Image (cartoon, rainbow over all chains, first blue to last red; front, side):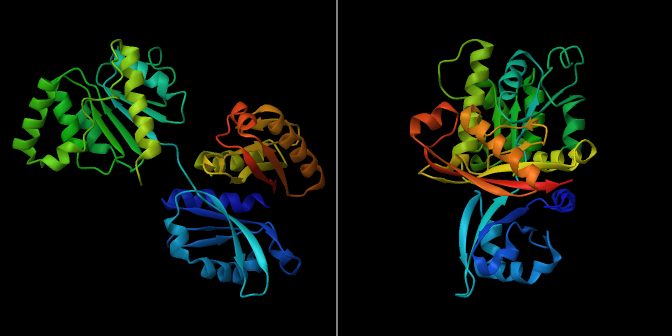
Amino acid sequence: MKANFYNELNNLTEDFKEVFVGTIVNTDQKHSELKEVKFALTKEKTIYSSSDQTEKINEILETIGKDNILKMNNPGLKEIELNGKGKVELYLEPVTDNPRLILFGAGHIANQVSKIASLMDFEITVIDDREKFLNKERFPEADHLIVKDYSDYLNEYEPEKNDYVVIITRGHQFDYDVLSGVIDEDCKYVGMIGSSKKIGEVFDELRKVDNASEELLDTVYTPIGLDIGAQTTAEIAVAIMGEIVKVRRTKDE
Amino acid sequence: MNKRLIEKIVDSTDSYDSLALATIVDAKSSAPRDVGTSMIIYPDGETHGTIGGGNQEKEIINKAKALLKEGQSGRISFSLTRKEAAKIGWVCGGDIEVYIENIEL
């Protein structure tokens, strides 16, 4: 395999969100020229590791159905019959990105959540307007520390469907601002910390000011975290990350 | 395959002439969570990522180094009991297939 294919693949993942890679890992004698050939596919575009084999690869793509590939969630091996003229074994996989964990608020709980999340493959972003809370000493493991007003950050934030948003700011008004900014986005998880009284107040404001439906409010994970009787900040962080793992591993796409 | 792994392959051109990409392509059991796990092996034995560690990973690394010398891609398979698999962090036992791709940088 030439590195050039990976250069092209790298560019493809920059330009397109959903990219799938296929590798012919085995063939019968008749199709040995297809061995090790790779392709990558998006809805709009296909690239090939070998320009000599584009026709054959397209034939294989037609056999599987391009739409079936674009729908797949998990990598796997497929045996493909080529019009009764032999067989190839194809390994198909989606290109994945690390899920993003976005922590609004850099207080004590955020600090512990960030630590635990760093043991998993999350890309961690923490946002707070207070530099004395949000710094490398307190969050050495986080990938992005953003010292900014929440509302300024929300203006530039581009949600992705692999985003996990945790709202743990220092005040009810900030919680409202952030939740109002993310609640109708297509994130995988939005959780907000707080007593039932505080959550009730934030939800009331969302109903009044944003016309939020009950259905929409129901999508917010609150009270945040799995019910494990957590008491200390570290335990609460475990409960939050436990819930996030549960959503990540069991909630359908 | 993870986006960051693709970036790593592309970035490796500065330091190496070739590398091997080992990927679990098949795991015959009920929970194929391991399928898609991959790691990079360089000709000098340096690695990036892990597919579980243990003796199996050592075997994969040795096979990859041998393949890199020959400029070939190849396959290696393991038969693991559930217990053996759990030991190295794989979810499932059974037959596990690893495809090792030789990439010229």
